[in-house]
Length: 263
Image 1 (tube, rainbow, N blue to C red):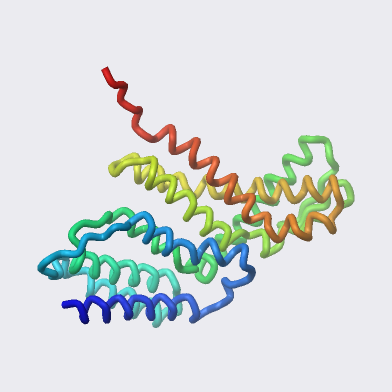
Image 2: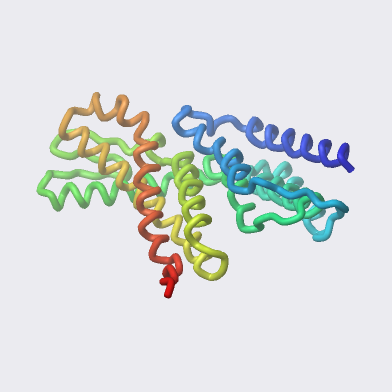
């Protein structure tokens, strides 16, 4: 069975490469791309070690046909999300065949290793930009600044602030979900609390991205637009990841069961 195991792993690697390279629009910058590519190594780190079964055999036989249908749907409709789901189902089938024990809930992490948000969810990016610009405008107005807003374009005290596509945070959003998922997996046990924590990831990512937009506005008003649109704008995604990680640590700490006090 060893050649079968190696060949199937090779097929998984090739399929992953196909998904990543079929549409490279998501590879805008290293600061956005590297966190997404880090999801699979993080999965391997959290899943290791994997104990191989003495007598391999597929137990959940529905996984392979479902994965094939999802992959076909992704190709026919030119969508990354079904292909990412297909890859995870093929991985599930591989683990179910060859592994002695593995975490099923951890299989959600590889789904975030593929750029389905950046490639398939452009409307989500526009909503992040529009709502983030609205929150930023309201905040600056409450602080006493003169604000004019038209869609995702703000003028604060005469300073133009365009919340353009680079601020939609699509790759950053996916990276935030990766960071948040790892915190959920480590801090929240299986059960209803785990799924509640996953549902909270989206709102927390929106809060973190809005903080990013507001921070860019504060920096531009304090040090000028050139400074804000330079290094700080390029690497602001990493700052958002730190904010997301801190928010997740706090929120999911509340969802974690209380520690038992030894007698």
